[in-house]
Image (tube, rainbow, N blue to C red; front, side):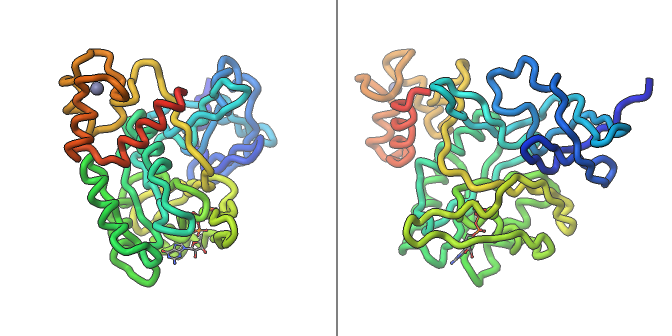
Length: 303
Ligand SMILES: Nc1nc2c(ncn2[C@@H]2O[C@H](COP(=O)(O)OP(=O)(O)OP(=O)(O)O)[C@@H](O)[C@H]2O)c(=O)[nH]1
Ligand SMILES: [Mg+2]
Ligand SMILES: [Zn+2]
């Protein structure tokens, strides 16, 4: 029996996976067997997946998804029980694009995406776009906050090349996913990194201060000059971290780690307990207040 060809999913429409095999993209249906035993999953395949395909039929078909090296997922709420929505698979890092303004910067959103990256052991970098629209001191404040857990913050401003060049360096030789709120400037940033991409970009609604979901599907793109790949994704509206039972939320905040052993109770939730080393560190400004605020909000969410 000859081995089935293997390719990578570069785009996914409702029921069709675009799979690149040896440089050629084939449209493939999803076999029913792929859905078996995946009741806790929103979909069996995502962009970035390596898959076995059958190409002798028309259309071709995805037969099997190969084990994932990494993934970035979130909770997809349906009838109360969260499903896992794997946004992308097999990426090396997360580029989290957060606009300084239009749409307004949400540190809660930033921290949730960072937690999802931590959960999947993916390195993450924050790119603060629209630095030209930023209130004074905002970029410096972001850099100060995220230096504590150890995330790099790159600022990108209209008309300035500096940050874009740093982003190119970060993307070189890797497969990266670019994610963030709609209208944050993900596609604009990628066009600046490599103008040959010619991605569609959109306006931010003045009334609602939200993007308009200009990018409608995830797409894996090659950065020829950088020998790398990126996945441009549709903007998210919100982000709920899908937690596993083995990882306490506090473990997803790197700057909490060195304090955890010093709490009075072994099962301290770092919310109300006396003798809590995390709370002490927040008071001593060793843990940024905004990070602790995000932690508390996620604890209250209780998913
Ligand atoms: N002033 C300023 N505007 C920017 C910057 N980056 C992006 N924009 C504008 O922000 C708007 C949205 O940009 P997009 O690149 O379409 O945003 P996106 O994140 O891809 O949005 P979705 O595809 O909807 O998720 C466009 O009008 C861009 O021109 C920037 O650094 N400065
Ligand atoms: Mg876009
Ligand atoms: Zn504690």
